[in-house]
View 1 (cartoon, rainbow, N blue to C red):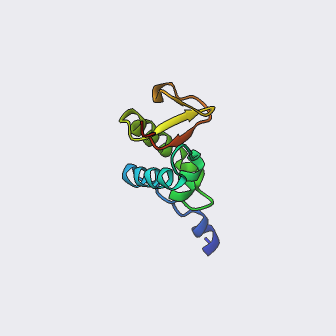
View 2: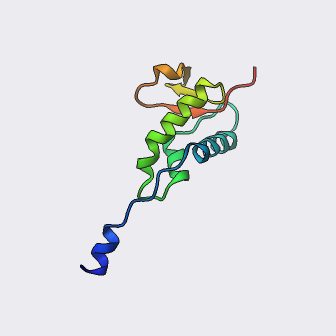
View 3: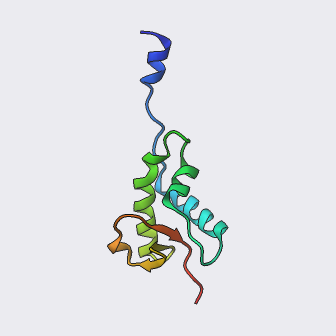
Length: 99
């Protein structure tokens, strides 16, 4: 077996854990400012290498939904906050608004 084929067979980078995903979501939503939102892709790219960030999207989604249910984040669809239990398709993530 050549050295190149051994490198290709290497295990993929582990997925981010929930704690690091939470930290990334809180940091990114704070950085974007009040009333603004980030895409799940932004969070996934902050968590994993350029070639593998797509693999982190399900983790980002799961953690964002849980945090929204806890009131720590908002999930937006077409610019409006939605119930995280109703999340389908394209969405964005933002910090809760001060009211």
